[in-house]
Image 1 (cartoon, one colour):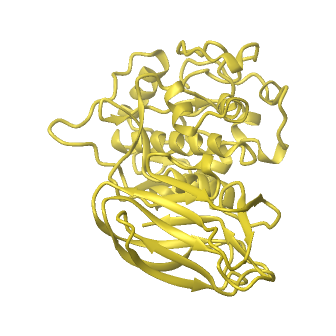
Image 2: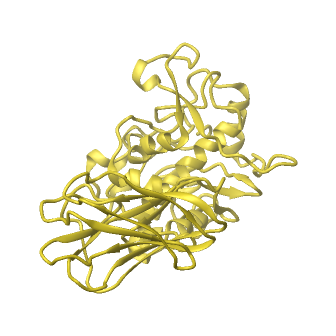
Length: 389
């Protein structure tokens, strides 16, 4: 950023923990912080805002007068990383759905082999940074952000594990005073961080970047060493802010891993023996569960909370295989326990994608989708993830 020290070298961020070099963000090797490169046709207002944020004089975020803040659904991305243009108005500008943009940024700004909670925290931070610039009128004359280290690195290449983190946090932003914060981040922020946040798991680490906002390595340590969830991690680095789901229309993902779910909205429970594994590629999140078919009740139950009654479509994700059930049965129940419908799916096929199960009228409260294993023995059923939309 304007007036900030450059990065001090990639080796500092990687020690003592190590990551594959091909996963490390481009900015770590190039030594360019988010918004530090002010080339291109920056709007004068954007340049002034960058300077104010760098020296700590930018005002606190505030909700619009007389109305709730509305999250943007799209973002204008100047693709100068592809066409080499020098101004947004003469270069290629893609108008992308905001969630698609976050999917294209997360694996190129975070480490995709990191803990799922770190990735979810990263998705929220990346989404909030982008939304803040859209709300501020955009960084460039004809675009909100670009696709290089000058803003956030965006590529059309995505990965299942980071896509899952984006889906799990869809519509979630870091909010303060009813508006998105300026969600800065850098690799290693030190203890305390440059903004005074006490970060004990980063004690003794050399600062790698400007040290403001979210600490990327810190997010990984808090998740992997202390079991902290993504909301706790994000709120830790932006004091006074709260992770908020805006609009209420974003899908709810119930993952097979209990730790991956937002406890206020989603939970998963197992009866009998369901084995956790990541043996077959293409699963949702960080694992999936399997159980042998048998003629007894021992289901996987995916529950989700609705504040008010409404019609929702249910999708299921599984990893396919030759030994899977040809009729894995999913049963939908409302919050009162009434069965709304059931459908059988062949899990030998259509793996590693969302498969629609049906649309049902759910009631307010905790509704659920039950995956039954009551069949003739000799196969397995896969419990991976359920999406409610």
